[in-house]
Image (cartoon, rainbow, N blue to C red; front, side, top):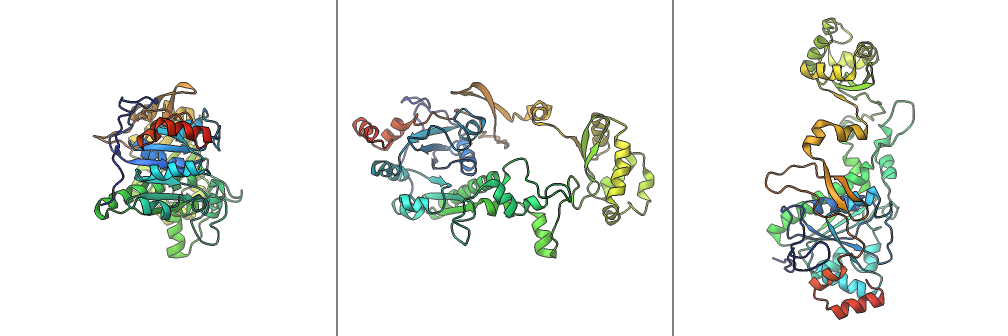
Length: 412
């Protein structure tokens, strides 16, 4: 069974040697990942592996003073590149490519999100690297796929949101298409790539072989249409914008209160009965306009107006408490500051401390998954550019003199 060369985690995360390198989790300890990614979708993928303990080596060009999307000290970079080591390599030089190929022989995973033709021109594509390391799992994230009529187009999140249908169902009816407030195509493509890598690593235990894992922003966005896509594929229905109203579960949406807004999710007939009784409106249960789900759908606006006339009489906190006590899902609509002051968010430990080299003591969002034996934490802040270059090159057999010669040649 082909396996990468042996290596250990017994190196100092600050660049020294001989001490144990901090590891974010025991779950993926021993898995080496070469990170060629930039911007957001690729780093999102690799962050998943780094946060679960993989030895992630971020490959950067020696001339990279700042990353696309912001400086190293910025929130984006700090959020996406924790728990990694950094090696600077100029892959356009013979020395840089040679070092990368030597490193790839020791790797379990390579992740890239270049345009589809770039890796082939550099000679670091899956076909080239898998000849030297048949067990390699190679993951590619692109805008539209590795081939096909749009493969050469540059891909960005908002473009994928539009082409993938999301913007056509987001926003209020009649107000035109609307993007969502996070780069959801980027994020989902990265998460799906990470999932594909883990699937390939599990399969490798049986076959001994790696494989090429591919996804794209467009694929991720279309998949995330989920039930809206199913409504079209199965019934030929083209969903439209519904604003804050749920397309099928009524009444579900945003309602004004005495001091703000709240969410209600009245899903199914049983919860509808609880809801009507909790509002003191048993008459709704016998009203032909509202007594059944199809009737409530047909009379959505009238029902919404009646509900909001009542919700305006009490505060959000009062309604949320009353609804949840009655078994009706309801919740506050928090801004981002309120999210991280929410007692349940604090209890779950989502904001984790980290000592950034650029910013000092700060916090980042940790993994949203709890594991009983191999939990994840932020073990290392994002690295300085090239912080671990000498350390990593020494691990794959470069002498001090060879490393100095590479520096002089501009290869690192």
